[in-house]
Length: 341
Image 1 (cartoon, rainbow, N blue to C red):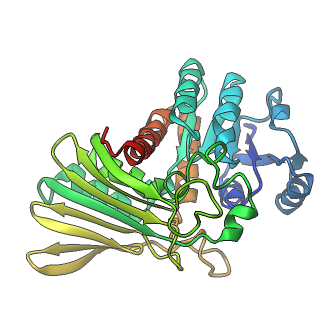
Image 2 (image 1 turned 90 degrees about the vertical axis):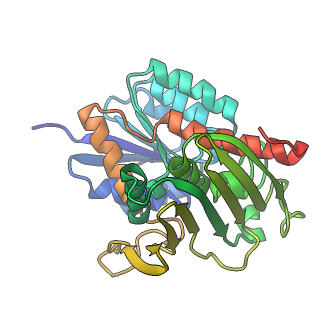
């Protein structure tokens, strides 16, 4: 009988339950260890998921019973942890961003190229039903050529969000603010839909939390794509509600709107619903994941494991993770210099 895939999750914070829950649903997979620097967090998570607790991820390097490691840690820890784990032959699935700075991500990619293990990055919104449907319209060119697109994120983060986790809101540890933490998913979708970005220009500001954080809570940008498509992007944590992400794609033959988790097509002045979210609830009827994040962690994680099993290359790898990280760095540069890159 084939042994189950042994799994460890490093970091027992806010995103941890989505990973742990997804792992427990997979056949032939066993969550064996949870790791956190805070012993109480590790012990609590281990008790809940019936596995071991550890306080140092380095203990995983020599364990032959651990094949896949999930990284749910602060941004500045991703690259170094992933590199050491890959060097030890562990497959790594890291939460976004790939690193807190492009240079750290580029160094990690060098390590990934030398490793036989897989490196995956969690951009779960690519697995949303609406995102898949948009991708289908693009690939089939059903609506003709894409002309322009936009993405808007209006969310809320209060002072406690940052003071309760001091690594947030700092350049050295978070690597930025709303851009690299919350709205990175929407910026990733824009470049996934629009293709190669040849120029990004805009600015970042701290509109509501400037006395709390040293990074931005608001950002806007104009993007130019290689085939002439234009993009518009706006994101803020200075709203007082977490409202659904808005996407719009204007084609020659119609316009797609994403409102909440629903996708609509406006064609010749007539609007129709073309995609709605599948049921994503647990046994109690509660929504799995926050709808404004996108509730597709389970789909992405299952797909990563399928690629590990079959040896196929996972689509959202280090190269894909670096693309949006470079866009973020270029937008920060544009904001500082009022220049486009």
